Length: 398
Ligand code: NAP
Ligand code: MG
Image 1 (cartoon, rainbow, N blue to C red):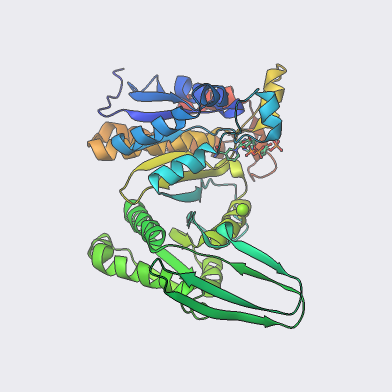
Image 2 (image 1 turned 30 degrees about the horizontal axis):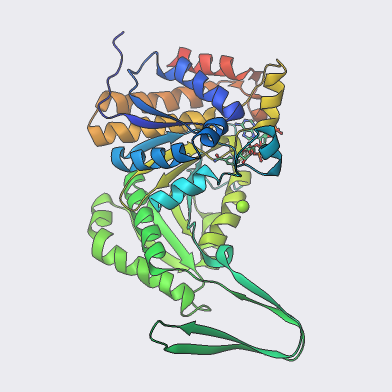
């Protein structure tokens, strides 16, 4: 069989621990036998990040900006314990954080739905994608514990000396205050990434804030979204038959619970943090959540939502067969290949990405599964296999 050809290479970012093992298995078992893979390889595994003073992460992000599509394996974000384990020079920053900052992108997460794993919300028939604004608000706050009677004020000082002051509260006794911020630039980048992604997947976009209460702060989010929609996306949304819908956050939550899914839900930073954990657990497993970072210029980086699955890796190192679920990482590959195919106009490659996803979903639905799905899936016969045999079953179907 002739292998499917590619034009532009993918930026391939390898990673750590169990997912690094799975990365190679996915390539060897379900991709390389079918596709004449073109990729530019960057080793983001912790030893190489340490050896290159993290330059490899920066290089891979820069190359992603040039080529347009990357696929990334999960990576360790070092903490004190990793410093000794890997004998590191420095406690390197999270690669995801570095890449996200360089691409100024937004992360979109959605569950992989299969028959037999029913979302706890019974009306959800199609995946719901959550886009979390990854900058500012409470995550970049400044807080003060107020010790007693005092007056708290907001003060903004401009370079020309102009000052704006506003009272927050007259404390009669002890309490707390918090200052938060966001920028027009970051909100606009977030909005553009969301409109772009919704057009891409041809699903309507919902956005919600609490602008009735937060008449300046949250209202600014609403206005920026509305302005960008009117000026840049409205015509394209109408042509694609999708809509942009704004509502209050509490109304959005109520409506999501009654919807059938198939929506992209843009969330402010805190809402996205909370709602993505809700969505992931309502849909079953972190191992079935995909994740893609989209920049406002339309650069894409695909990955799994889970980490490097450390606990399984130590078992693997002990020679035990592990049954780690490769679905989210596999969907990162199929997502990246599909996007590459669309950009380079390669219908065979696009069809391959579709078939790879269909074959893997079917493998699960017909009962061949990894250990994490055993108590989650409701099907008559379950055949729990290790990761390699699971991938081989997919390849067979493919
Ligand atoms: P994790 O790797 O997501 O794993 C947490 C637990 O979730 C696992 O122990 C496992 O449960 C289950 N799990 C996750 N993915 C699974 C899969 N594919 N198949 C089967 N079970 C799966 O999170 P973590 O243990 O908190 O973090 C480990 C490392 O990953 C850390 O160094 C962290 O910095 C890094 N991390 C990286 C990223 C990223 O690169 N995007 C994201 C998050 C964390 P059981 O053990 O019960 O089977
Ligand atoms: Mg969270």
